[in-house]
Every structure is written in structure tokens, then in C-alpha cells.
Length: 119
Image (cartoon, rainbow, N blue to C red; front, top):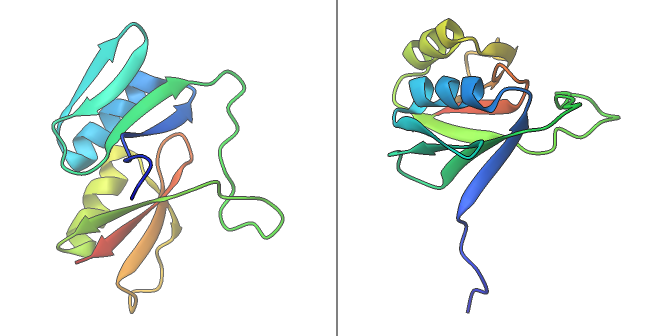
């Protein structure tokens, strides 16, 4: 029997509203701001929220001497189309050159790594 269920994945960042808008444009849904807490609503799967973190330092990827902390796997139907959209929203490619794989790695505007994964 499980002790808990996954409620929300919270990303530290310098600008929660801006990062929330990036993910809203990428995944759909809408950004809700409540007392400084920023949540992405209306998206299937685990909820995403964003909190201000003074002194935020983005994870390094890949870095054998540093942790990437975590990454998000985002399922898409067409990698090329999804890549164009993500880049237009401000994502940065981290490991997207290998076109033979069914996934590509990017960073969101705050530097968190995420993968676009073909379904």
C-alpha cells in the first residue's frame, strides 16, 4: 500500500510567472497565481508549480561533477514539430543533435533540463 500520491512537482526558479507561462505555452493549461505561488492548471498528469528561489543556480547537464537534480520527460507525437515549438518559446538545446533517438534534451528558460520524447 502506498503511503502517498504525487501531488505537485515544484520547480525553483528566478521568475515563477515567466517559467509558468513557458510551460503553459509548451503543455497547454493556464497559469494561476495565488499569494506568490504559481501553478499550471488544466494539464493532464502531475501538477507543476513554480516558486521563487533567490540565488537560484540552474542545474548543469551533462556534468559528471554536478547533479542535474531532476528532469521532466514530455511525450510528443512529432519530435521535429515539438522541437520547433519549444525552441520558439525559449528552450535551449542541450543534447538534441542525435536524430536517431526517440528523445532530445533541452533546458527551459530557467535552465531545468527536460526531454521531448516521441510516443
